Image (cartoon, rainbow, N blue to C red; front, side):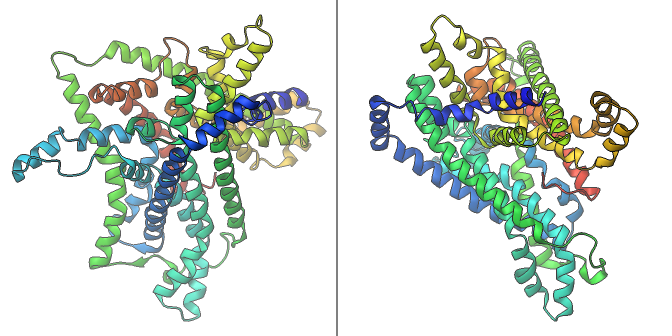
Length: 539
């Protein structure tokens, strides 16, 4: 059983290894392609990706850390609401936010047309949002919750006792905040920034819709437009190296979070409570927390709803409700199947490792965990490259037909990318089940299958449901791998919304976009509930 699970984890990790393995099969033609890219497209891809990632890093650091410090260290009007409301943009995929703000701010929009008429001007009132700076702002609004969540958890767990100690030593409020609280959250901020940068580099929807020359758009362009697998693999390997570096930074920052004191330290006295803010300072803190929520969730959802209402009352087109049901069913079917398979695999792997399946199985599971940090475009190329190589080696074998445009190939991509999400949730559930439970059951004569079915499954029910829910939502939002590998006639809501937006049919893109946001709210609600009940959000 352990050998089978180890082999399965290694097979699911093959897309990452397939991209790297392309270099070992490189010939003179492959090196010539690389040299051509170095002198043509690679500098543009590297520069735009770097500017985008750095801009997002600075933005999420400022917004996320500022909001976390405000709701944790200060008391001001609306603080209790902002504690959970600041998580809402997590439900908004970046490409959905791009569709909403593009329609709202473009030259022909009712907003800009009305302002031009009111002010008596003819030209555009602001630059086109479909630009590099527009993408940076959109990513900041979508991804700052990563920094906010980790920084708030770090400050909530550790800052109270140390701020109290600093007060007793004579430090004033300003020094306690700048010299104790914020440096304490530095590892959490670094981890959140690294996660946001990985999400930015992995994005395809915003970059393609805005016409940006990033690595993700370059990979899919090389594969789907230029039909050049070698160029796609080379670009994917460069992006994979950058993501691996960011993942190393994030892991190092997470390890540094373990040094601080536990919750059971000094008591929460009145002096250690959040500092009250009044007047202009309170208004500033309120504005700091309100703007990200308004711009990143409330206003875009309201605008999408308005677009949907306009589309519903359009006499010529109307809402494509019949087709929407088909798209929703296709999405539900794919996401549900991937969620069940990922949760089942995670339960089997975690159970095997709990019963002593360390060594090869643990190493294979950790290798599989890298898949979540790998962009969907890289996963797609990593699947198609080995399939093409095998098809070339054995022309009579239907290898390419199995993974290209089939349900099997799509599930393979989903499991390769999202199994680690389910595994982390199951492992966190197992961490709360003491080993004495297993030992007692074995002493009473229960075999492994009975221990798992009668003891572990009931205890892990909530963790398994959470794992399935997280995978379900991730699959619903996934775009690049689905765009490349989906079977004919199996368009998902994400693919449909992207195709409508690319064709400038933003009104029709509103319905699938709102459906994606609505489903994305489910894990955000669970996370908010866990935070309110005192649980941590480190996972």
